Length: 121
Image (tube, rainbow, N blue to C red; front, side):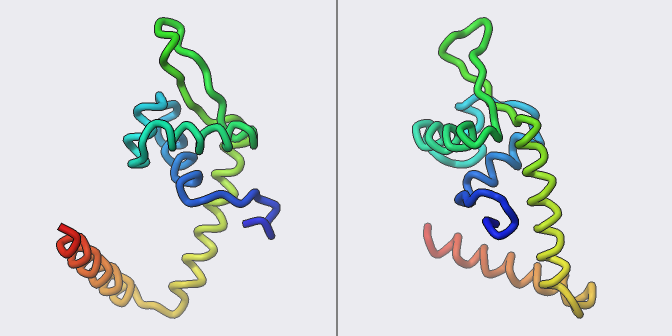
């Protein structure tokens, strides 16, 4: 990512940006639930994105304890760039795969995931 002029973030940062691109804006509580992190961890992650000017944090007009998180213009541009890079990576990874092979791979990965989920319970 840094080779593309994009800052290095952990996957949770990217997931936050993705969630905001789908939802428009979220409260810190909603966002922490979506990314499966506690509120204090989500706050630290969002603050880093705010410092990079990718998100903005606004107080709720009716409840001063509530904060709304949304993408900035720079955040929307970042998402478009990472989406393009992701598509290029997928195109490269799936080169010479037939549709049947892609479907079989997905089936096998889902089966593997289910096995690992059942093991941890």
